[in-house]
Amino acid sequence: MEPNTSSDFSVGRKADSLGLSDEELVIAYHERTKHHYQRYAASLGYLDWAKQPDAFRRYDGAPLVSLPLPAQGRELPFWQLYVRDSVVPAPLSVESVSLFLRYSLSLTAWKQFQGTKWSLRANPSSGNLHPTEGYALLPSMDKLHTRAGIYHYAPKAHGLELRADLDPSFWASFPEGSFLVGLSSIFWREAWKYGERAFRYCQLDVGHALASLRYAAAVLGWKVRLLDRVSRAALARLLGLDRDADYVRAEREDPELVALVVRDERRCNRALSLSEELITEVANSQWCGKANVLTPEHGVEWPIIDQVAAATMNPKCLTKEAFSSFPSEAHLFGAPVRAGAFTAEKVILERRSAVSMDASTTIAAATFFRMLARVVPTRDGRAMPWDVLPWRPRIHLGLFVHRVNDVAPGLYMLARDPERVTSLRQSMRPEFLWQRPPSCPQGLPLFLLKEGDCRAVAANVSCGQDIARDGAFSLGMIAEYMDSFVVYGAGFYRNLHWEAGLVGQVLYLEAEEAGIRATGIGCYFDDPVHEVFGISSRDWQSLYHFTVGGPVEDGRLIKMPAYGPGGAR
Ligand SMILES: Cc1cc2nc3c(=O)[nH]c(=O)nc-3n(C[C@H](O)[C@H](O)[C@H](O)COP(=O)(O)O)c2cc1C
Image (cartoon, rainbow, N blue to C red; front, side, top):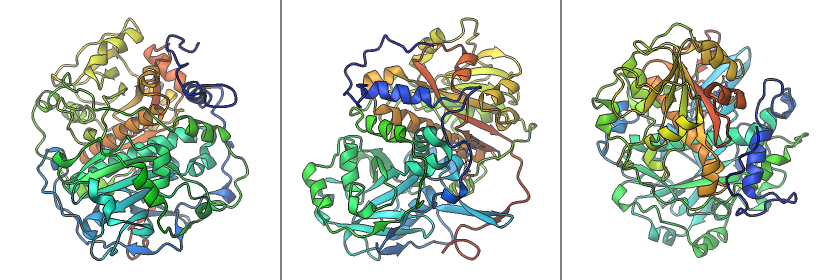
């Protein structure tokens, strides 16, 4: 397959000594990190356990504020998170910030098998390696600290490490009662196991973490907005990630994103930015703590990861796009969803990946349609969690349907942007049917492409993983790829993965609410999945796979609580 030459990438900044533009470098990175039937992307090829990174970043010497762990969190049903303005916003306090972090980035369980113990978190992560670090920039709150500060979140302690004080004037341009959250990635955590493909997994994990933050905010009646005008260089200074002296021999963190958490949506201005002066003031304040070393000697390094990170530093600023051609909530769901089995807390804290699927559970068509409707933004652009992203969806779902009552098994397409149906259709096999499934809600842009048993092919393209075959359905997330670089620049490579991660997190939680389970699938054969759908141009790329179905629990594992007796703290 030849690279698409129709798009003009010469506009991009020359990225490296080879004279590649940022866009060319990103495309080259993506190509070389594809898994093929006959060759996997470059990695060590085995697990060097002696070099396994410490799962927890800490800043030695930074004062730790332990967050309270209420025995009971917020009592509201999961479905209510989607009902706009139905949750009374919690006041900003140490208790509400504690719950926000508990529901988004905290530990949710420990598991043990034959003397080995490991923790699991509210946000999932490829290989459970957790490259994503969380930060909170908080105004002063009683009990927490007398001064506003920049805090690193320490999940094992469920505490906040004070990295630097913030002058109270910092908050002058932000709505009252709001605060900022930041995410960074430690690429080494994933590269240790996955080699060059690790950058992709880190970005998918950021997407999952961003969705986790959005859902956690929803439980507290808060909103989250990406501040996409803040450059990554500015973000590095804001979070102290550029402070060489604090990372002597320690693995660096790459700045990913900063978002505003706000109680009143009307007070939320996406254009809010952080001026150079403000950031310089922060950078010049007194910082404390030195980052811990996760692996003393790395051995093999993967320099392409730093190169693609550098090439994706500055996406073009995103403006809020129009969603008027999208379905309304009524059209998407048929009837509004106002009932469900579980509380939000239960769904969020008990979410787990299925390690194996039972090859028998069948789900109702209504459940299937509802899950898919949750990944499509509504026409007002305000459906949770999609209100966190300012851009129109660029990830579409190629589905392998196995076991859904009254929905014929086969290949399906969900165009998450209804205006992309035609271009998807033109790029895929001409013999595909593009038929609307019977009883599918009118506004759900779902199409049957081809009827038939696709269990074997689903497993096959997901690196032979049975979970893709034995669930109710699995899918490939197909991105509008080349055009994204033309419109937004090379930096949007990260955003495409974030969007895919968000889709994944919605499916994880929806599966939990439906009493079944899901699993993210980062290991898939890139080009063979394009082949299934007849995609031959590089304008579209599959970025992530997913499976949903009836799980098989591994009864040999001992489960322990996240915190308290038997857990951490
Ligand atoms: C980006 C991503 C890729 C993943 N890829 C796979 C995969 O290929 N196969 C698999 O069995 N699980 C995969 N998982 C599931 C993780 O192994 C799982 O999230 C992790 O072990 C933590 O468990 P939890 O989700 O129950 O918290 C993936 C998860 C994420 C977020």
